Length: 143
Image 1 (tube, rainbow, N blue to C red):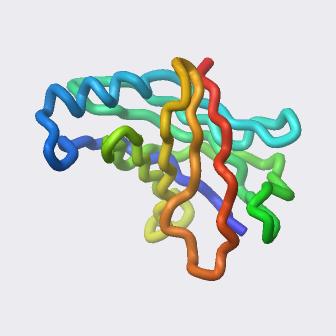
Image 2 (cartoon, one colour; image 1 turned 30 degrees about the horizontal axis):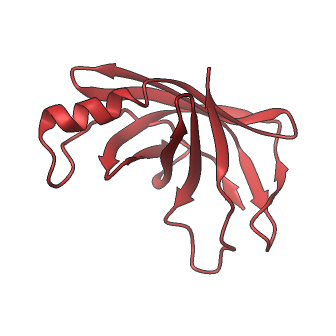
């Protein structure tokens, strides 16, 4: 079970091998509001905006998310919270977003987004405990 996401204030530095302009250009592709749903219920909404060649924003998310051994989501709580984005960086062609948990500052949640279309991306959680089943990607849509 993943309990609580935290919204992080994004601070970005260029990815290895990229100039600041190239990294900022990659970040611009992720500007906007990204939402993923489970049975019609939004359980993660990333609000990202570009400022001074950095992404800043927040994340509204379900407090509890569970998935089965097959990697499919099974339960998403109706209770939500909003947290700040701590960091958002390009890693190759993917955006890695770190979100701190306001209730548990040492518990940082990391989401990786990979563009699959103009307004679509696949997302997944990174740095999960070793015994966690491999999750299937979540489909995010920009609104």
